[in-house]
Amino acid sequence: MTDQTAPHPRARNDGGVAVLALLVKVLFLGTVVGVAFALTPTLVGQQQWPFLIGIWAISAVLVATYATGRALPAKYLVPGTLLLVLFVVYPIVLTAKLSTTNFGDGTRSSKEEAVARIIGASVRQTPDAPRYNLTVGTTGTVSGGPFTLFLVAPDGATYSGDAEGLVALGTDEVAVTDGFVREADGYTMLTAREINEAGPELADLVVPTETGAIRQLGISQAFEGRSSLRYDEAADTITDVDTGTVYTVQQRGDREYYTSPDGERISDQSWTANVGLDNYKRALTDRRISRDFLRIFVWTVAFATLSVGLTFILGLLLATTLNDARVRGQKIYRALLIMPYAIPGFISLLVWASFFNRDFGLINSVTGLNINWLGDPTMAKVAVLLTNLWMGFPYMFLVCTGALQAISGELKEAARMDGASGWAGFTRITFPLLLVIVAPLLVASFAFNFNNFNAIQLLTQGGPFSPDNPTAGGTDILISYTIRLAFGAGGAQIGFASAISVLLFVITGVIAALQFRATKALEDVN
Image 1 (cartoon, rainbow, N blue to C red):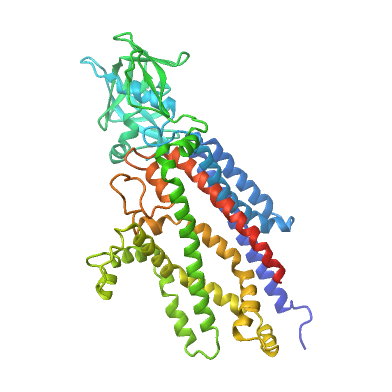
Image 2 (image 1 turned 90 degrees about the vertical axis):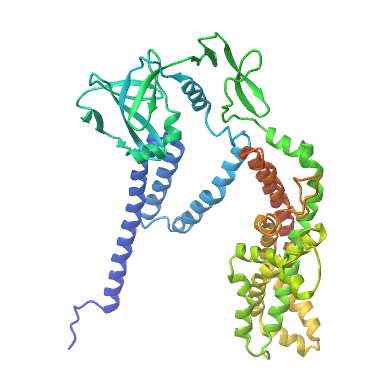
């Protein structure tokens, strides 16, 4: 006789699964909240308020969604929405914001930081300048700060100082050993090695005092020197107290500098500033860019179209051939055909670049030709298309193979019974149904190739270049051309590059939207 009171095995399994699910949920939500708490001190110390609010908002959304059994649809929508916002929407918004600034080499800091560097650079040590034993602490990270100087004077008095000024400390606020501050509440003290690695940031840290300013002197010393410059925040001017010269902010191109009345800059230090739509105006009106834009745009469209078209045709041909049941060894052939897809793209491009070498390349050596593949603009374009064909057809082969196998064989059999030839059945039944499946992937592939920077940069570097135009090469597409302009010899112009990225995003989006609209006609096939 069986025990009627014993729980059913399935009930015990369901109970175990419920306990495991609850445990996973608690661990997941606990990790999310724990990470938020762990990052909060660092973000507060660095005054990164938007990130702090964002992290806690995400944590609150996840806890509210998964802590209870309610809002079942939200449990599926929230992960995808968060990933969309973090990895798509936020980068687009950040890029658009940067596109309205002059951010780049020489303008990466704020105006306040630039003024502090200018003032700090003028601090000079005098023969009778007092010195302090120095310890560096931080409330953030040891590599990024923010940093605070902990100072011990010769008379034993202790101070803490940053860009805001000098503060006297009590004996109960810090622990002093051998004349150096070793501990302070809320601070992590840097080792000598960490101080050395943070040297560039510490060199710009100046602590203002009533009689001058304090700067770092080596690993463990600081001195109080005299600054020859004074900053008037209300008037936004810097005055040289030795000469009486007043430096005001003046515009030079897309940058601002403190400049004297006779046009002399006090420093080459500039800062990030809002330039409005100037970057877009430059991109659309600068003659250096516009003179080659149309030619490069046409080649970009041709490159993307031919890359997609050729890889699709070859992939479809091979997929159709191997989809025939009469072909033996289909698995072996398919495994061999996807080999190019398994090789990392950058390796393939570098290998193919060596193949196209005129003197020692494999192609000319095997065929006996003497073609200057990478030196002639036309042949360089052919080389790029051939390489992209070799790299891209396995993807199209896989896509077409899956699409062909998804088409019902009954339709093909019905066409044969109606007397349709193999070609007629393929063009009137198989191919239209296949396009319904692969059309969105073709559009996505076009958008990818429209901005396929690696294929150009690793194979031809955008060349060949003519002596009279070293900025626009024969195989440059829009992305490679504009990156060269934005990150060329003049240094990184990230604000300008962001404006170019926004323009390319709009162009690609418009073309993709037109293509998707055209593919709607295929919906009638079903």
